[in-house]
Length: 266
Image (tube, rainbow, N blue to C red; front, top):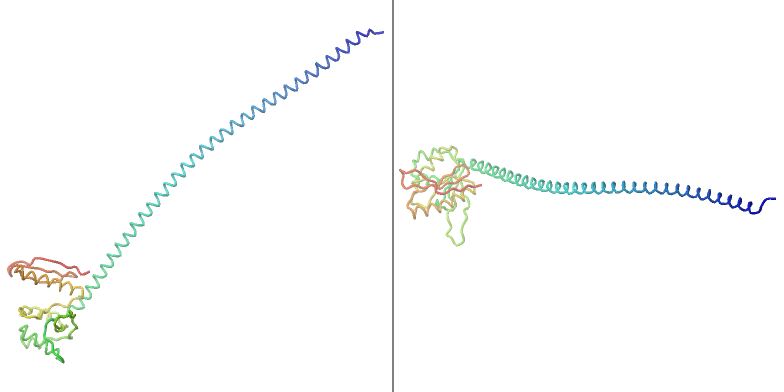
């Protein structure tokens, strides 16, 4: 028969060994869990590091993108300013070109109108009668005022002649309406005008027929010329070149004519 104390010791020893085995297994599992946790922590740290790097890279890219955006914005603003400047310059150039073309067109139109009136002479101040015969009035002018020979006067072929209404200032004594004469030959008109010096001291004047704006310029220069003759005792003449009306003066017939004033009529 076994000793009870020996049996108890064996059981206790078995129990201790079993507990020790379980403890060892527990430690093994704990080590495994700790290793896995450590690995997990390491992985998390690596992921966090990668995330930080990604965030940093993204931040740098955002910064660069913002800089690119700012540069692009400044570039667009500069381009808009350049476009506006170019548009203003282009519009100004177009305006200047348009004005130049208009001026050239007006000048050409004025020259054409002047050329159309080339064979016309304008007579102002010739006494006017009711129901007058205009051809008798012209004969009277040429023979008695311009001192031209009657045979020469009779040889002149005219295209037309008539009076034109004159502007009358309020309160002013009615003046004779001017006569416009159209010659067939330009040389006849020039001969007619060359005898104008015989009208000195009379209130009759014969001049080239000009477009209205050139007539106005000539009338203004005529007023200035009258004042110069009166105050400066100079000789004056008014001539036209192209679309410019020119007032010239000189002291005597031996001197050269000097330009005193010019009027550009377009």
